[in-house]
Length: 79
Image (cartoon, rainbow, N blue to C red; front, side):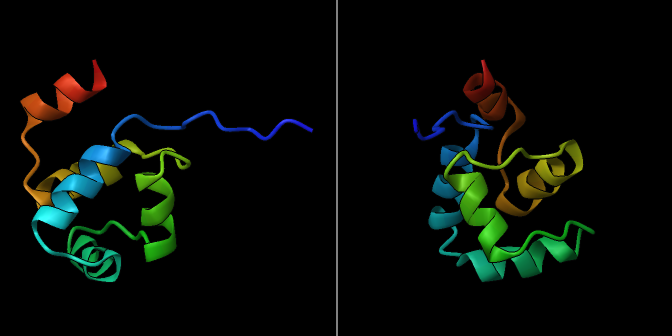
């Protein structure tokens, strides 16, 4: 049986990079996201960073706010 390795998102690496730059654990990032009404636990964040979980638009907005990700850099990552 072939293992499914297709990525569900292309921004996981960018999120991980910014989280590490801010010296945040996944648990701390999760707590900060809750202030923006985004409820992702550390396991879900791990799956996002690995590209195995789809990021909803409102989650992406919250992640960009908390991690201070520039829209242009995000757009370049997606393209």
